[in-house]
Image (tube, rainbow, N blue to C red; front, side, top):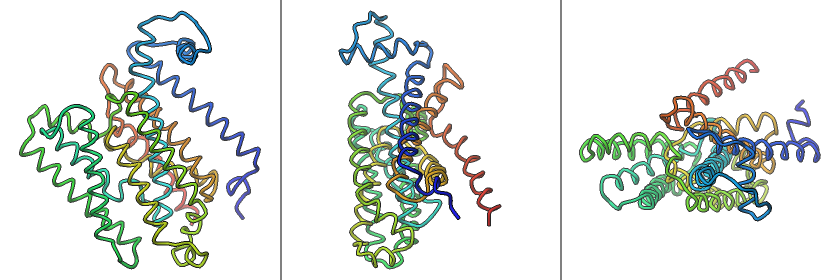
Length: 345
């Protein structure tokens, strides 16, 4: 018999856990802002924020204020939003596809975004905004390819996964061909680093965009939380409850593709967050998506900020790609989850 804590918990317990998660997230963001070649005390970060909000008027070092507001705070916030979005997408896709290995990249969106970014680096447009636009366009091209392959097909869950694999292979091949035939050595190096994930170039405009996309995506997914609960028992069970299966599935696929595309267009391909976080949160909070989605968002945000801190500090002054950090942590952690599940069979 499953314990009440893991299934739903009491209201006060959920509020306490949520409050603790918010405090932990704020603390992790503050540590991320303070970490780097120029260490900044937490007290300075606190007063920099409260001064900006007009709550205090504490005199601060101008260099510290510039580093906080022009570089590190926006980076930490984008990392938090990206982790939250990827974790939400993973939870939704695992429910829709009834596949424990489903994650945001199962639709080939990451591969499509990579192709769009490579096209920009090789001369179609200039600047960071054009890079994001190219990645965004490529991401939705991949999603359209998957939708075309699965349109009207029965047994859509397995077909969607296979179509996602096909899309990933196709767009990865296009990316590799483009780099091999058109890129200089420096361009190839820049592209490969971007493909592994990095928050180094994000600023406040990127944060505003990803915040809106992730918040709207979370709201839509919470709106369909009961439908997601029904999908875990299969399409027939969902249809018997009066849920328009095709419409809801298309809506949620579109929302997850939108969130993934926005994140990949800014930070590159970052794996395992959408794969591992839903499993961990499902173990602690149970399968009900009204609670699970919020828990995934909080845990994904915390994990991504911690990964970004590690990427900047492990081999300082050099930086690791964030995707390398999440893979190094995610692979053994997910292996432990699989081993635990194997022992319980």
